Image (cartoon, rainbow, N blue to C red):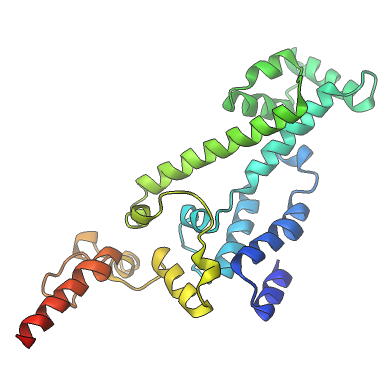
Length: 260
């Protein structure tokens, strides 16, 4: 990961290219063999992915994860892992009768159903299919069309993530301003279009990586109602909206009165 970051900075690569390199070179290593171990706690992988995104955008570690996903258009690696686990299960049940993997799976499934043993892997597949509304496939232990199954799993995992992401953006107090201009999930083109220094400034502004009263007061444990602007007579809440719209209008009106 650090090699990708080092080379990207040396060549001044666009953010989209850096994300593509990460997804192409680093992610395959991270999730290698996940069809078997993907049922474990995947939080460390999510932290690793978010760390890379925050690193290339020069953002603080405290930046909300939902904003990072929203700006970069990246999705948690857990979605890929869930998809690969379910696809591996579909291949197992559709494999040739007598194949070692098919025989082992059938044996473990029968023991699991009989409550002789509890298989965490089979339980994970069962629960995940249930979450996606595909429990009937587990009950029948048969997948007619593997390509269709693969597509529908990816589609439903993506839809669930987007619904959850939208809910977090709507409810999170740190996204009070972000949700005003972030309507759709996806990579923001300004990250590639704007020059480096302007891109960093705008990105920090959009992702609450600034020293405005609302954010500074958070770290100083000041009540939100008291995080006011000291640069104008209104003493309004010093958030991004105020400094972008209200505060500038106040300054303009005051200067205009002086000129008159």
